[in-house]
Image (cartoon, rainbow, N blue to C red):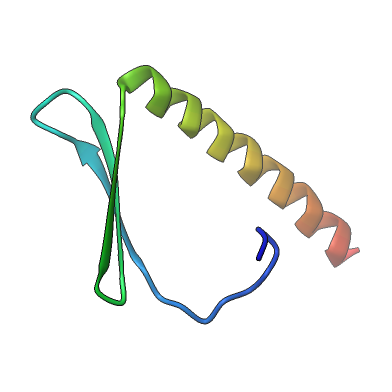
Length: 66
């Protein structure tokens, strides 16, 4: 299993602050709940990685449309 392997699985993802000062990414799928807590600096690093991945995905998409 890898990042490019497609799956036919639906999941719900929520992102928000906790009352303890963390950022929580909460994923629920098929009765499984995965709460992941990050310090604010870690969450900002993750956000930067997501932005970079989005930019890379756009570049790939443009190349495939040509």
